[in-house]
Image (cartoon, rainbow, N blue to C red; front, side):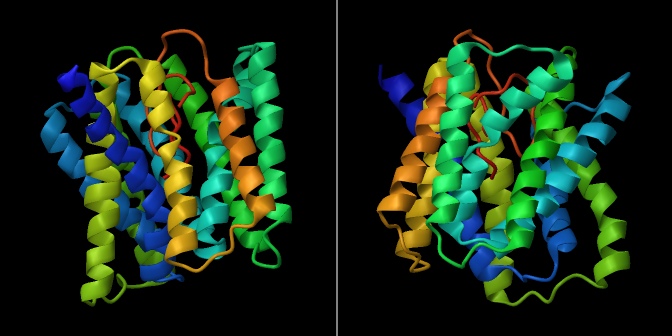
Length: 308
């Protein structure tokens, strides 16, 4: 019992770190460097996890890692960075909390994985919550931020469908390290060409990048996958709900964002939709946004990784 509680507490750190990532990106990282922001998050984290996993890609996983790294890391991290900069922290966290529901619908459209009625009900309830949150946010929602969030969900959902088909032959943590590394290597020359040299690093920015890379990516993914090995998938899925909650609470407490009745109701509907949409089987899914190697549930994943 004590062992399970320890793993619950350790695994809970992952969605909390992802939820805090919205605030750190918006408050401390340069707003005009999304390519560098994504590259400096992905590549060091990928190399850290690669050292931990101690496995190199093999066979088809060379090109799979390149493709999934492009979708789940390079494109997704850039869009997430833009969304975090352009939307209030609480709004960005709530919108991205609907990513497992977007994965559900994408799997239906692209892979013919017909969801149950409860899953469809969860999707519509969750999307209704997102709409309510956006309608209640006043004039703070930008078209760029909303488009980035929507595109991030769509890109990661397509990446999920592909990863779900290719889950065999690779440990999830190793596959995640390959995708992060591949995505980071792709982003480096693009960032240098489009944005010039890396952003200036004072102590504040360096600390923020350290958090995003080490805590919110490398450590969070390692704890998440460890939790998936030691806890029931349903427990990990529920812990994933801490992601949007952390984002909303930090946005309200530290950024002074309003959390009125309408926004609160929208958040509750999103969380209720995710719970309704959770698969009832034993399939477990790694964190979304990031790097998926299994089925859509919560990330999140499998639990719910709402974007991170």
